[in-house]
Image 1 (spheres, rainbow, N blue to C red):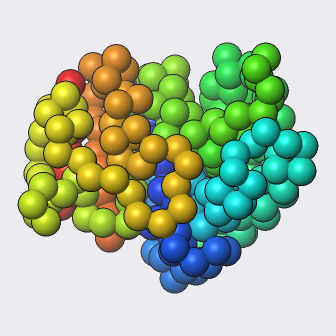
Image 2 (cartoon, one colour):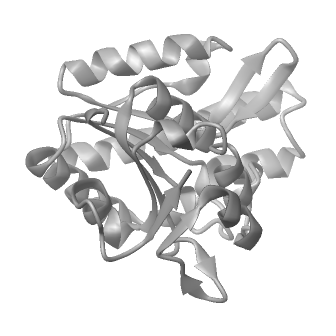
Length: 243
């Protein structure tokens, strides 16, 4: 069992409307902030948070047709940093000791990311990263927040990994699947709606195929179920992914 740390990936669809550029649901963010604060008080020693691009980053990249230009890169970085500041501000107002971390600053050195995040968590802080434009040897690329979440959960030996989405969990025929093996989950996921440049739910799950067995608890939930997923062994909502 990992230490009492959790990694939370806050999908953009949970607090923005991906079909409307630069939309934001502050009430949803406040609900998430309260859940994180309560979990830190009741059951966890640390949380790392990663949020998606939602109607900010996904929209900008889509409008540019990708990240092939410097303008596309600069604007994506600008608007994702703006979104990160909004998320961090809201969490702080909810009593969460959140600190924003610019993902693009790592410039291809992903091994440094986990060490930096761990240093923040060991000091009682909640590092907040995000899916971002990223510089690699190949040029400008999108670094998915889902990929960051899987990697951090593994590297930090987190007890729990939670994906918060705009729906109540993984859906099959319109109903939430309560428990499913990750290989089976790939067969039932549907494509995302709105602006999404990182592959939606199918990509989110596929990224964890080789990592899932190293993480004790993995959940896909709606924001209303976040606290249960973090603090209860068998939450009565959402989907539990099994290796």
